[in-house]
Each structure stands twice: as C-alpha cells, then as structure tokens.
Image (cartoon, rainbow, N blue to C red):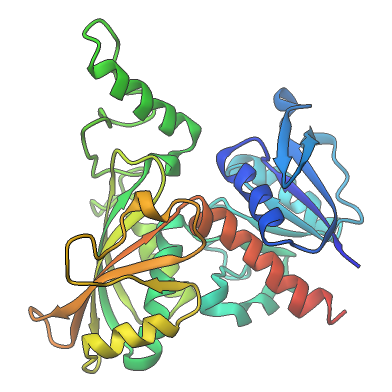
Length: 340
C-alpha cells in the first residue's frame, strides 16, 4: 500500500523538482497532489508521465495525507505547516522557518538519519540550507574517522538558489550586455550578476557575516556536531544550477589524503572524481540532474596541523532541496510508517 503525498509550492523551481524526483525514485505513493497559491490554481505540472493540475493550498484539507513536502517560503509555511501537522500529515519543510527550532529535526539522511525520531514533537521536519546539505554529506564520513575541529568554506552559489527570478535576471542581463539599448539594472540581486560575482547572500548581520553564512555555521553544528567551528563566505556566481564549495578542514588527528579519498568513495551520497589532470574534477554544469554530491581536488592543507582541502559540487535544486526532502520522506516511510 502506498502513501498519500502533497507537494506545496508545486509550480516553483523546487516544487517541480520534488515532483520529478518522487517519480524518478518511484516513491511508493498511491496519490500525489500538487498544491499552489490561488493565483496559480489550475497550472499544469509534470509528475513522471502524468500531468497534475494544481489545487488551492489555502483551502486544501490535509486530513488523510501521510506526507506534505513544502517549498513555499517561510511566511506561507508559518500558516500552512501547522495546519497540515494538526491533521496528522508529516510536513517536510524546505524553508528556513523551522531549521533552528530545537524541537524540530534538521535532517540530511546520509548524515543524521536517527534524528527522524524527533518528528513526533511537532509533526514537522526541516530541510537544511542548500549549501549546508552538500557540505555535510562530504564532512560526516571524514568526521567519523578523524573528528573535525574547524571548517573554512567559500561557496560559489548558482542563481537558482534565489528562485526563478534569480535565473531570469541572469538570463536577461546576459542578453542585455550585448544590446547597448537594453536595461541591465539589478532587481533580484544587489548588483549585476551577469559576468560578475556577489559576496552577499541574504541580509547582513551585526558581526559582518551574512545570514546565509550564519546558516551554514548553525546548521552544520546541529546536523553533524555542535563542537565543530565553521567560518563561511557565501558568494553568488553567474551559474544557473549547481553550487560549488571550496572546503578546508582541520581535524583533531592526521588524516591522509589517500585515506580520505577512500573513505569518501564508500560514503553514501558521495561521488569522488579526483584525477590530477586537466578535467579530472567536477564542475556545476556536469552535476546538474544528478543525485550525488561530487568531491574533487582532495589534498593535504599544509598551512594547518591535520588539514585537508577539497572541492564539493552538487545540484542545489536536488541534493540542496528537493532530493533531500524526498530522501527524508523515504526515511520516514521506511522507519516510521512501515513500523506503524
């Protein structure tokens, strides 16, 4: 017997990807419903070889549904997630609203699957920030071997992390640069994104970091180990899909780069592509549409004791959002619903 699943925000980038992945992974669903705001009511979206028409999220009754995947932003989630949870439907939320609530699990299934048991607190599970998700998949197996003390990460985040408006702005600005009469003024981003990089994602905080950088710090501690120190610099780059990260890790004990490579090759959700030759690494373009988190450029960092450096790339719409949410749904189905 399959489950009844609702996808809220089904017309957005992440919502559409959730439907794609549910179909690709043959999630055991007897019924899948696409939900959207009233202005998108009746919009057609794909679910495998089927076409679904969106229903009105505002009037939808979650009674009898097992799982709801939310990709609607924090403001709307604040209204509709408690409504779904009260009806007995587990909410897996992609917004930042519940990530830092100590009563709500923040889960990356390859890293902290046992946290699923905390769903009972509020019938809500949080999906992490896209840049955090791919990093912790690579960090956890290494942490289990040598215990991480400190991480310094610089991200190169695609415009799809800012939604369809971000992708449209990169496309429009790129075309406009070759047309001297066209407008290239930024709207979604703080500065021109075409042929540029912007070291500013989300709002600035009192200590000079941005909220995106703060998210990576707090979420890594919650998901992996609260003792890990993290320093992040998050940068928006003119790439449509796929986040990249330069990650420097300091361990409590020495970890040889060859052993690290072997550990990561065996780690769930990780694909190592690390040849010391031209093209022997993965770039964002190559990771699009893939489930894996790719790790390349693994090498010793001689500037600190027990240091390693690596390059981590993943499709942010998949592992950073939709795939991780579906994996949580799979985990919930296998560990909780089957158990009864």
